[in-house]
Image 1 (tube, rainbow, N blue to C red):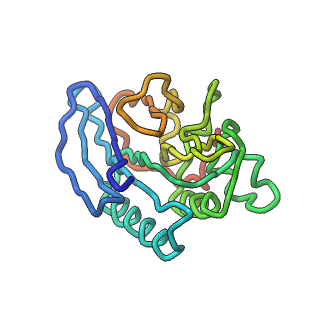
Image 2 (cartoon, rainbow, N blue to C red; image 1 turned 90 degrees about the horizontal axis):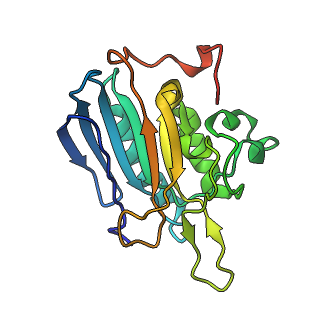
Length: 212
């Protein structure tokens, strides 16, 4: 539904410094961990148009996300939590058709892909993002199940993190316990920022030991 976007996060001694809603599809918040690291986070929540919506509406959504990304300060860790309404597959799903986009994916998921998934990968590639929820092995991956007769499950909800910050992500994926009354299964991201706040993000193309 139009009000189906819920984002919950917890930091030790956190301070919410700002919240910037753009539309019912996107919102952003700036948060600081006032514990030992002092790290700041730029967190964006998104609710992508479904395949029933036009490509123009889809592009409007990605334009909004780009506006929120542009507001991020250099040293902030960027986290995008979204109902992507897209099937992105896993790394080997795109070996033939979008080999460069494989850098945006891990090896874990239900493997289904579609055109909206290809669009999401293009967005991730442009902004040096990794779909963190495909990078950790889980027992379950689907986050929404069709109410039609086939009852097919889909992995639609994801966390996106800049590639240079994947070193801080220690876990991401399916939650066994739902956070709210929703037809989607929750996912969670666990990260650990160590020491002092980081000083900028290294361009992923220059990294020699890229894991994802």
